[in-house]
View 1 (cartoon, rainbow over the protein chains, first blue to last red):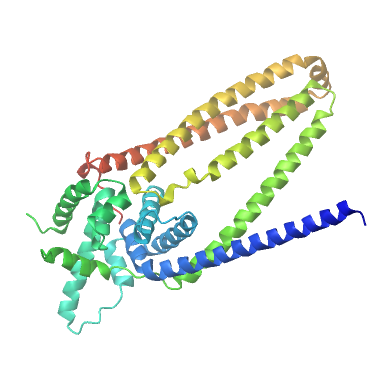
View 2 (view 1 turned 90 degrees about the horizontal axis):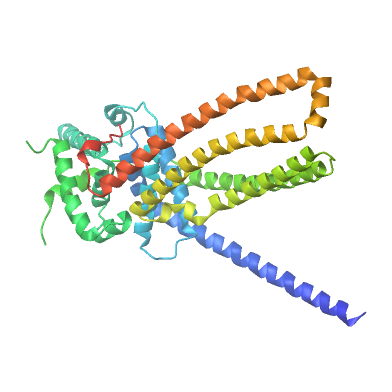
Length: 198
Length: 207
């Protein structure tokens, strides 16, 4: 057998090995990504659902929005290089998806009272009067948050989710000072909407 | 540490607002799988269409008339422009979901403005296309004229269809442009809100 043919066969074997190694690496990184995604959904699933609540009042559309937020996180996860915290990354994507939804959504919307009656989890507290009062407060808060302008709504939701000013600034792409000033205004607007100020 | 009771109360109320929907994770996994399949299928179909159009262009190239050469060149150009557009759309910069809200909205604004420009250019291109077709027909009239005289009914039908299609296309383009302008206004409004301008004048209730 000529030497050239032997060399070509050896090169072909080496190329096959390289390809197999690359396929293994791709499969492993995909598995790692899937595990990270599952963990993120487990950790932030409730927060994503609450965020979706601030952008959409209709239950069926909201469920779709939650899934779309999760899908956007999955698509963005491959490009996540740790430039910001995982929490900031998740909130950024979820909010950006929510903003797009605000533009795309269609009327009519279900009144909040109907949503409250149909799907809120049952409060386990023993006193019905206290329970009713708390439910009423929650409905008022939900309604007030949903009535805010988009930017204020976003800030208030991030604040309610427990993000620091620095994290809110990172999510929104504005300075911390700006966050402090606007958050103050947003809180005042929320209070107005709640009817807590004359 | 300063105690903020109001905020604590709100947070307590907010935390019970919503839970993830039932079977949320499995539904998302199903959608990811279906999205992957659609991605593969879309690319396979694109390659098939690409090869098919190239083959058709090659076939047309062998036709002796100048119209055949024109068709082949036009189709090849269309294929390469479509492929370039597809690559452009798939670029990472056009999926800005991971950036900050401000960067996302700014890019959204640029993208909508670019689409409006593209729409305007498309209208000019369609007008130019009609002129090119008319010029090509005039240049090949010795060949086409014989066919027109031989089968006048077929040519009248084609002409009527082309004339009727134009208002439909222009009406559709005008509708799309109005829609994109409305989107542009909405995005501008969000940007203004982020800059602190006229926030209270633009309340956008969800429910």
